[in-house]
Image (cartoon, rainbow, N blue to C red):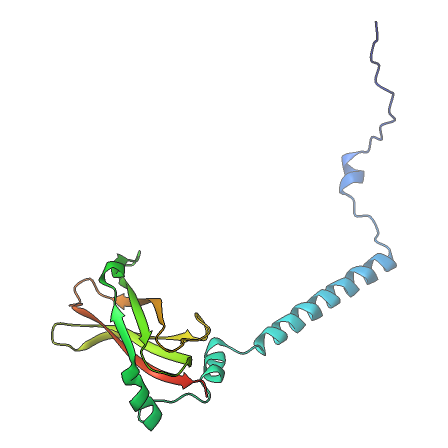
Length: 185
C-alpha cells in the first residue's frame, strides 16, 4: 500500500502592518519604469502621426480617377451611350435601421457594348419618386475597386446601398448614371 504524505513547506507569516507598509523602491526600478513609459508614449505618438499621413478614401479615389473623362467632355458624352446600366428587380431590397431609416439595396448590371476597355468607372445610383425627382443618391467607384476592368461586350453585376430614406418617402424607381469614365488607350 502506498501512502501520500505532502512535503513539509516552510510558510512565511507576516503581519497586516508589514503587508500594508510601503516598501522602498530602488532608484533603478523607478528609472526603468519611467523610461518604459516615455518609450511607450513616443511609440503611440509615432503610430498616430504615421496613420494621419496615410491617404484617405477620397484621396485614393481622386488618384484613381485623375485622368478620367467627366460629364461635358467629348469622349465622356460619346462613350457613355455605350454603357448600359439596368436595375435587377430581383435584387432590389428595402431594410430598416434601428433608428427607423430605410436603406435601399439596389442590384444592377453594367454592360459595355462599346469596343473599348473601361479601366475606371464611377457611377451614381439613387432613388427617384413618381414625379421622377431624385430623392437620394450615392456615388460608387466600381472599376478598378470592385472589378479590375470591363472589356468590350462584357457585363458585370453590381450592388449599391443607398441609406437615409424616411419610411414615407415615395421611392418609385432606381436611377443609375455614369459620373466618371476612364478608357484604356
